[in-house]
Length: 407
Image 1 (cartoon, rainbow, N blue to C red):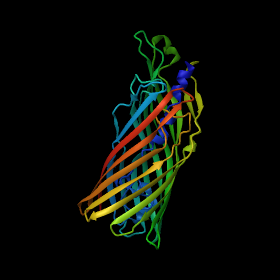
Image 2: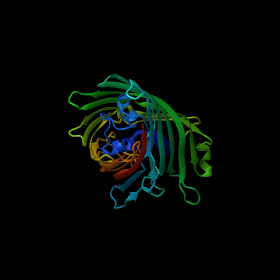
Image 3: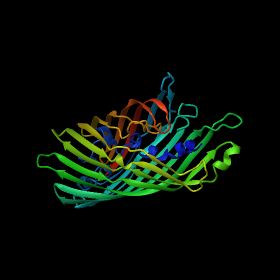
Image 4: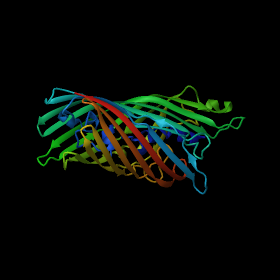
């Protein structure tokens, strides 16, 4: 029974910052161009993509967007022809940006609210890995006030403070059956907060190429009073005391990016971004329960994730004064080493393609739509802790929509 509880305790950090749940959906123009934006001036999403570029924007912006995320994953248990599928549920990452300041001035203020990590996964209560996960609803919401300063006509810098509100609700089966033959169930739910920062530099070169360099710090998020709910046979309830709570710290990773913007003609904009994500902060996970029993002990488990890189490229074509066509793509490496792949984040190297359209509804109002298809390579693994063995394969489909008002 102690092993059962250790599996329960081991879940939250995995789902919170596995590569598969870094959603990267912070702006429709940027998504349409393959998630590029570090070295570009496009709209208010620069508050996220490069705080140093915000002051160089020709207009002030207020904008909002949403990117419904459809995560379609399948698991084939080793040695069988069975295929377990996730339920067709939709997560809703969103973003809001404001960037205001004097026209052609030396400063601008920005505000951003966005969801850089999140996921909604439901494997059901009868699949092969139900004792490792049934369902997951995860949100990490960042609030980021920002200041951007123009040092010269060709160089600007900026930075912001980040406050994170993290929310998680997870359920899994427990192999303890009642008189009706039903499995027990554990639910872990709670919220926490964390703090971080980001900074960026934006450069306009004499050749016309624009360059951006940014760093978003890691954010250590602490859940101080998470709620642990156990539904077990009445004869075992004393081993799973209720009410009970837990404390855990979740280290969300840093990201360092460099991006370039190229402008071969008046109609074409090309972009290239590269990112290094500091997943190596996830060395181990530890949980502290308020009430312990011989079956419910605090836990410490090694994870040893590794840093991962991604490369992205995109283009925009100005078809006419009111219509813009965008496309792009890229690839990302995996942060999860062999032996640590889980149902919450069935991670592997991935490739993605994107497209988008921008249309000026009015002189100061822009409508942008995007679509992304992402394929996560099939990966056959045996998890060293749960011993769940088989092959995961995942496809992700993400439409998006935003409106921007600028003046």
